[in-house]
Amino acid sequence: MKAQQLSILVLFAISAAGVAPASSQAPQAAEFSGMWVHPFFPGIEPPESGPGPVFNRLRRPNGQVNNNQWVGDYTNPILKPEAAEIVRQHGEISQSGMTYPTPSNRCWPSGVPYIFFQPGMEMLQRPNEIVLLYLRNHEFRRVRMNDRHPANVTPSWYGDSVGHYDGDTLVIDTVGLKTDRPMAMVDMYGTPFGPALHVVERYRMIDYDAAQAALARNLKINPRVPDTRADLTYKGKRLQLVFTVDDQRFFTMPWSGVITYEKPGMLWEENVCAENPFEFYAVKNDAVIPAAATPDF
Image (cartoon, rainbow, N blue to C red; front, side, top):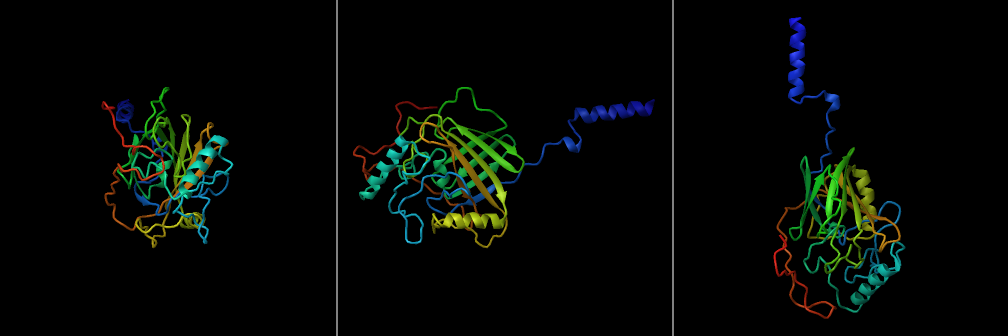
């Protein structure tokens, strides 16, 4: 009887301490933390299959985009007529020898998915939160883990992001991005978005051979940039992001893009972008600089 009582007491103590059998423990999350670089510009890779993002219509002799002029392919079937016309107008400005304001050349918050152009990203994995730090202009995002979007999301620069692990994949779901802002666009070609914009990101590690295949697809479009260096001797796994964009106001169908990150071959140095108060672009009005009569906090 005493032995039976002792066993019961031991089981009760284990239960009170919150110790569960190994088989009921939550699976270990995949490890994505650390610095990653994507030294290409403008950077978004085409998906392996299916509809993809707007790319530059102007190409160099080797097939890569001509980054001297930004002429988005307004014939891309993902675009509804209104969006196609906006992209076409931006291209005309660029071909005239001027430029047009974008979040990156005006040093404004990028939003999602525009922010994926960033050449460097550091991911911090916490039990209840993912923090994404971006190399340029101190941009960052916070992702609540295992949570839901509020019933009424307050629109914000980077939207409301919630995440969960699906096996070895981190899934981030983002809604509620601000549209009542200058330069509300999903890419550098001026492609617009509406209030119902919905972006789903899927991060996972891929092996070296799969990364090389993605690199080959990417180099057909995007050139490497010299100021952000990858460790080209690294033969291990890489972090890949596949994101899907859905917005029924401006797009005829959901479409996807890819970012295949590499290990950095450089230090993470502070990179500051300051608003330019001078009018250097084609829109004939005063330069847009963020201002508020009262604090928004």
